[in-house]
Length: 218
Image (cartoon, rainbow, N blue to C red; front, top):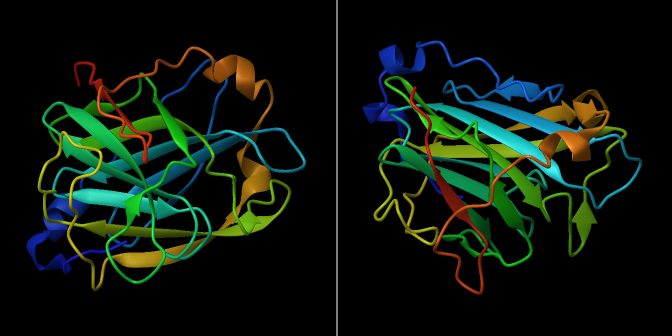
C-alpha cells in the first residue's frame, strides 16, 4: 500500500473524536487506533481455524484520503482492504501487492457493505463484511491467537473515488503494524448477526470484488 506524507493532514483533524461503534444486536468489535487517528475494528465468528468471514469497520477523519489494512501483516502477497470516501458514501476496494508498487485488484476477497457505512461532518466510516480476508495462498489468520495487522493511509484524495480500482497515492510515513488478539474479537452467533448486511456496488470488475453503499444521515 502506498501513501504520501502527513504534512497536509492537520493535527486538529486527527484530534476529533471518532464516532461510536455501530452495535448490531450483539456484534461488538475489538479495535486499535493507528498513530494518525484512524480506528480499525474487527469482529470474527467463534471458530478455531480459517477460513472465516471478517467484519471490519474503518473509522477515519475526513482529512484522510484513503485507509487500508493488510491482513497478513505486511504489504506483500496477502489481501489488502482499501477504503476511501466518495461524496456521501464510502468505496471499498479489494487489492493485493506482489511487490513494493501500487497494489492491483484482488479477486480472492469479496465485500458486503453494511448499514454502518457513513460519512458525517468529521469522519467517514466503512462498515463491511469480508469473505476471503482470513485465508490466502500461503497464509491465513489464526482465530485463537495473536496476529499482525498492517495499516496504511494517505491524506490525498484518490483519483476516482467512485471506482474500486482507482489509483491511490503512495505512502512514505503513514503506515504501521499492530499485534492484534483475534481471540478477543470473537463474537457468538456472528453469522446470524451479520446476515442482515446488504450487498452493494455496481462496479466490480472480474479481478476485484468491491462495493459502495449510500450513507445514512449522519
